[in-house]
Every structure is written in C-alpha cells, then in structure tokens.
Image (tube, rainbow, N blue to C red):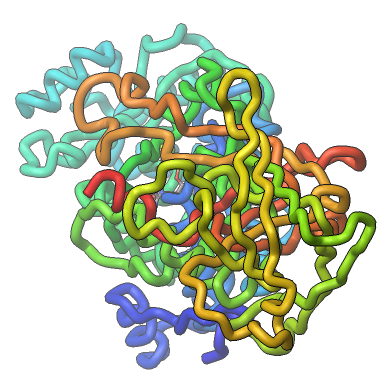
Length: 561
Ligand code: ATP
Ligand code: MG
C-alpha cells in the first residue's frame, strides 16, 4: 500500500469501508479496486461532495486502484457544460498531487450507456421480469404505497417487448407509459414494489440530443453503469441503503457475469451554519444573495478555494471527520481547525492594518527610514526573515487605541505605552481630533533604545501591536467574512434564506507592508494578529484584494458562548 497525500500531514484514515476493502483485497477478491464519484451536473460541488471525493479517490489511491468520475446525466437537460467544467476543475484541484494519476482526461457520462441500459431492459422484459404499464404516475405511487398490483402486471412478454419498442420509437406522449420491474408488490421495502425503470420524456438531452424519448430511472441507470464500468465498490450515502436490495435485484435478475459491484453506504456530511443541497445553493446564487457559486461565503468547493482554503486543508478535514454509518452534524469548528492547523505551519507572517489610524513619532527624524528585521514564520526557521521599513509616520489599527479604555487594557491609550512589533516601544502623548470629535491622529514618542539589540530592548511592556510605515504602505482591499447563516441549522425549519447573516461580508481599505506587493496567489499569509489571508481573483495589476480565509482564533465561539 502506498502512502497517499505525501504533502499532507494527516495520516491515512481507517474506517469500516477501508476495512472491508482491505479484507477483500487480502482474500484476492479483486485484481484492482475501482470506485466512482457520480455527480449530477446540475450545480457546483459543495463540501459534502468533497467528503465523497476524498473517500472514493482516497480508497482508489491507497489500494492502487482507479476512481472514475461519472456525470450522472440521466435527466435530459440542454445545458450542463458550465457544471461539468466546474465539477472537473473542482475535483482536479481537490485531489491534485495526490490521486491525479487516477483521473483520466474527460469524465464519463451515464448517457454514454443509454444503448446498453436499453438492451438490458429488453433482456429483463424477455425474462418476464419487467412490464409496460400505463398507470399515471400518481396512481403508480398510490398502488405502490398500498401494495396493489397494476392490471398490466400480467401482460405477456411478447406484448411487453412490442410496447417497449414503441415507447422507444416515440409513439406515446410523455407519461403515457412506463416500464416497471416485476418484483413484489407486497415487499416490506417499498423500493421493491415494482419500481419504474423507464419513463417517457420527449426532451432534448445535452449529450444524446433527440435520440431518446425514454430515459432510465436512477436505480436502473446507476446500477448498470457501475456494472459496465467494472466498479468494485459503489460507495453512496445512507439514503441509498433502502435502494440496495433493488441494486442487487437488478444485478441478479439479469444474471450478469461476475464480478458484480458492491454497494456500501456511509453517513453524508452535515455541517452547522450551512446548507448543503445544490437545490438550496442554487437559490442563493439565482436570488443574488451571494455573488456567485464561488462566493467565498459559500461552502462550495469553488467558494472555499476562492476564500483561500487549500486542497490539503480540505482533504485533512475530510480525513479527520471520518467515515461512519451514523448520521451526524459536524461542527464548523472542525473545518476551521484543519485550516488553522495547516496555515499556522505554512503561512508567512506579514504586517497589515485594516482600519488605519495615523501615528506620528515626534522624536523620530523626518526623512529617516530604517529597515527592520521581521521573522517570516516563528513555526518554521527555514522561512527566514525580511526587512520592513520604519519611519516617522505610521499607521496602526484603530482597534488598537482607546481614548477611555477599560481596566487592564494593554494596547495604546493616552499616556500609555505599547511595543510596535519588530520595532520600538512608543508612548501616546497627544490625541488629535477632527471637528466632529473623531480621533484622526496620535502623536507619540518612541524609546529609541528599545529596539531589538538596544539598551532598553528587554523592557517589559504588556502590549504589542502591528503597524505599517505610512509612506511605504501599499493599499489593499480586504474582505472579511462571517458565517453566511446566523443559526446552526438553517434548514431545520422555515425558509433557510430568512436566517442569512446580514453582516457576513465587510470590505475595508487596508494598508499593508510593501512586501505584499509581490503577494502570490498560492501563498496564504498571516496578517499578524488579524488572521489568515489569501489573494483574491479580483486582484488586478493595480489593485490588491485579499480575502480573510479565517481568523486566528475561534471568535465565533466567544461571540455566541
Ligand atoms: P445535492 O442534494 O447537493 O444535490 P446530491 O447527492 O443530489 O446532493 P449528487 O451530484 O447526486 O448530489 O452527488 C454526487 C455524489 O456525492 C453522490 O455519490 C453523493 O452520495 C455524494 N454526496 C452528496 N452530498 C454529500 C454529502 N453531504 N456528504 C457526503 N457525500 C455526499
Ligand atoms: Mg442528486
């Protein structure tokens, strides 16, 4: 067994599915493992899909197998290119450098198997295990519910074959007929009460055009696609546990040649403060409640990526939550933990001021500039240090000054002292205000011996704050995010959109140390004391935009606790 995700620090997980696969491998049941990830291309992928991708590609990779991506395009639609492209981009990004050799070029499509699905259906009819029915959908549902047989159930095979061929030839309107499996109308499991396998829909399909006017239902298409692709383990979420007998019935009734795929279910990911269904996410996009599928507040894979979450942190999260059979609601804090844990190790530290307040060091000569040493990452010696300019006029964060502070306030206050990170201890002598009484400038003096290496460098000062040199600082737009929803379970009751957090985005004009002019899209920065930030796509040559991926500590827990 090879080690996956060599770049990740998270150990390979073990869980009941991996135990099953390992057992079967040991028993020589499979020459090679083959899993699949089968998204319906009707929206962008979300963090729940990430769990499934990490499971399916992870297992394939760990056991030297292959994972297929299959677009589950059983429903005829005209437009899906955007979704297919985004799905492929998201999957490639998420498994990059880890299982990418298992990911071929183009995805597979369920619709590529429509001919074979049809041939299998004809075979099933021939075996007397399926029949054409004309009951309308509601009546079919009702009969299935009460366990009553349709009058067409005993239709002779020859007649069924003819009718099914005529369905395919387009002789009947939508809804006029269906093909149903002939299983057991009294079965305790309702899915086995003669489920519909094909329905008529005169609609154009993105891939097959107008070739078909009958389309296979999910269970038929999915089971046989798994078989046709030689899938060994068909891993799906718990809702499909009740479908498993039908899955097995289909494989056995057709007397297919082994090896047959095996379906195993696991609990889907549910996260607090989020909605996870594509149908709901699409409403947020279409109603303009977010800026798009990749809005950094969305828990889509593209939103998380844009926000600055790395593929390795997302994989670590998916591995940490584990795979079980029991439905549960995971804390958002688990995702945040995975991100902080990685970024603390990897992110270079930088100084930036979000709400600039001018500070003039009155005893520092005009025109003088010192280049001070700043450590890039205290967690990583190899990251070295850089120079940051210090001069007479600086910016500090407005949040680090209070004119009338509470007791034990260790940041800057009138007459008080604070240390400027990597620089001097300063004392606030004078507060300058505008006509409206707003503080617009602080006039301070520096202890010029207090710099590292100076006579008073070891002075014990309780507070240390960040700063930038006013004339050297560069401008950046900084976007701060909060959770999109105000309640832990927005779709528990009522309209989830009524629980949107009105303060989920704040845009600020920040001042950054000059080295951030060279900020790279693939680096996450820690703005000291403020959080971890990532370069946003909106950054243009003349304008820098940073997204705060996450704060340094869990401020949310404090707020609500
Ligand atoms: P949605 O309700 O968001 O549309 P879905 O299950 O209909 O979700 P699909 O595109 O059909 O979306 O899902 C593709 C694969 O991803 C399936 O195998 C499904 O089981 C898995 N998946 C979807 N949501 C989750 C989740 N929350 N946790 C784990 N796996 C998931
Ligand atoms: Mg679906």
